[in-house]
Image (tube, rainbow, N blue to C red):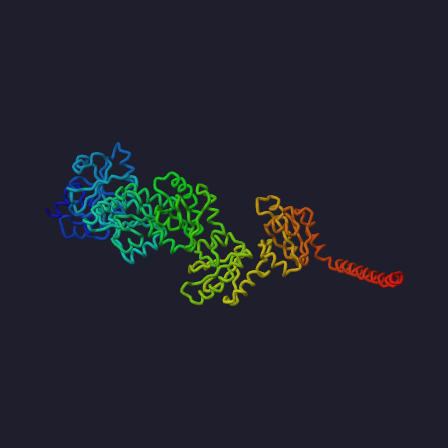
Length: 632
C-alpha cells in the first residue's frame, strides 16, 4: 500500500516507528502541504518536531496496534476500560508518570480499549499491562504486580526488555574480594557449575534469581561465584552455600537455600534488624585472628537455653557494634573444645586473639554488656590494646584520661616506639590513665592527627599532643602524670590512688573530695556545689581533686562520705561543716591555707617550752645529785 493512500484514509490516526519512536498522525490539518506528494510527507514525518513523543500514552485501536507491534522492538500495551473502572483510571495515571522513563529505555507505551483483543493475549480482566518483545504476539508477558506502583512497573519493564539483567551477576577473584570489602550489604552465592558434582546448584540458582530484584529493592547486592579459593577462605566445602556480608562481616545461611522466600526474608531481616552473624569454623578462626575485639557465642541448634540466650544477646548487638566490638555465633564444637568450653551456651571475648570466658548469667543482657565494656575486660596485661576508629570515639567519651598512640604497622620507627611505650602501660593504668593504640589511617583526622607516630592525651575528650621524644618512656609517663596535664578548667579532676599519692608528694596544699563509688545522691549534690568554687580554690593555690574510694578515705580518718579533707604538707584536716554551703567551705580553706604565721608561732612556743623543760630538768639533776651523794 502506498504511503499517500494510507495517510488519506478518513479520520484514521496512523503510527510508524523510527529509531524505536512512535509518531502519531492525528489530523490532516497538522500537515500543510500536498498529501499526495510522498516525498513531502516523508520529510514531514522525519522532521525533529514530529519525532518528539507526547507526555500522554497514545491510544490505539486493533489495526494500529498491529502496525505498532510490527515496527517497535519493545512495546508495553495497557488494556483498560474508559468508563465504570476506577482502577483503570488510577493505573493509567501511574503509567503516564513513568511513560517518559520507559521511552528513555526504548520501551514504548500505548493504551487500547478492546477486551476481546485482550482475551486473545490471555488477559481476562482489566486493567492489565502486557509486554511484547520484537512484535511476538505468541508469547507476550502479562504484568502480575501492583499497577499503582510505577517504580515496580518500570523495573519490570526494563527486566522484560533485557531478561539477562534479572540474572544474578557472576563475579570472582580480586573483583569479588574488593566488592566484599567495599559493599555495605552483599549476598554471595557459592556454587559448582558442574551439574554432575552439584546437581542441585543450577536449580537453586534458578530459584534465587527470582528474588534478585527484591534484594535490589532492599539495597542488598546479590552476586554468584564459582571461585573455590574464596569459598575455601570462608570454610565453604559443600555447594551451594550462601553468605551475607554486612560491612565486610560474614554470616552464613543455615537453612534451605532453594526456599527462595525464606532466603529473602532472612536477608531482609539480617539487614534491617540487629542480628548476631552466624559463622563456621574457618570463618570464626579468621575473625579471631584478624579482629581486635570479637565476642563469640557458642550454642546448640534447637536447644531451648541457647535460643533464650541468643534472643537476649541480640538486644545488645547494636551496642557492641557502636564500640567496634564484633559479635558472632557458631555451632562448631571443635572451636569450643579448643578453649575449654564443655557446656552450651558459652560466651568468649577475644581481645586481639586473647580469649576470656564469661562466667556470669548469659540470660542477663545488661550484665553481659557491662562485662564486655568493663575496662578490666578490655585491658590486656603488658600490652597496649589495639582499637579501631569506632571504639576510639567511644573510649574518648567514656574515659576522663586516655593516652592514644597513633602509628602505622609498616613503620619500623613506630613499632620501636610502641615497644618502649608498652613498658609504661601498666604503670599508667595505676594512675587511672587508659592507654590504647590505633593504626587505622583516618581514625585521628577529626582530632588533627595527620602524621605518625603521634601520642595524644585526651582529658575529658580534649586532646593534648606530646612534643618530646616518644622513645623515652619515663619522660612520657612524667608528662602524662604531671599536675599541668591533670588539671581541667572549671572541673574537679578525678584521680586514682596512685595518682593521689604522687600529688601528695609533689604538692604542699591539696583539697580532696572523698565520695562513695556506689549510688550516693548526697555525694552528687555536694560535688555539684563544690565545682562552683573550683576556680576560687585554684586562686588560693590549692590543688582540688576528687576520688571515689571509701577504703582510701578511711586511711586518713574519713569515716562518713561525702567528705572534704585539706592536706597541708601531707597533714590532713577534715571539714565538718555543710559541703553545700560553698562560702563556708571557701572561708575554711582560706583560713587553713594562710595560717602560716600562726603555725610558726605555735611551733616556736612548743619548742621554747621544750627547751625550758630540758634546762629545768638538768638544773634539778645537777643541784640535787651532790646532796644525794653526801647523804649516802
